[in-house]
Length: 50
Image 1 (cartoon, rainbow, N blue to C red):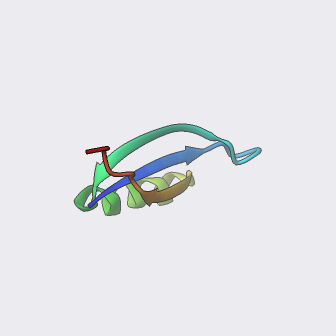
Image 2 (image 1 turned 180 degrees about the vertical axis):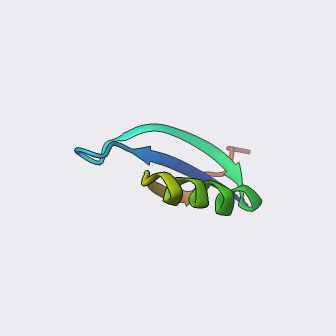
Image 3 (image 1 turned 90 degrees about the vertical axis):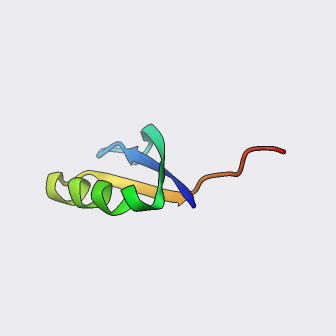
């Protein structure tokens, strides 16, 4: 499963960038964000159209 992770602006919470990663990478990214105080929004990535 793949997830979209958006980094949120500290002031107004608007997404400033996003990336799509596999499930194995989510924990590492969350740990890094927690260590630096970044705010994230994580949701399942949409499947590609068939």
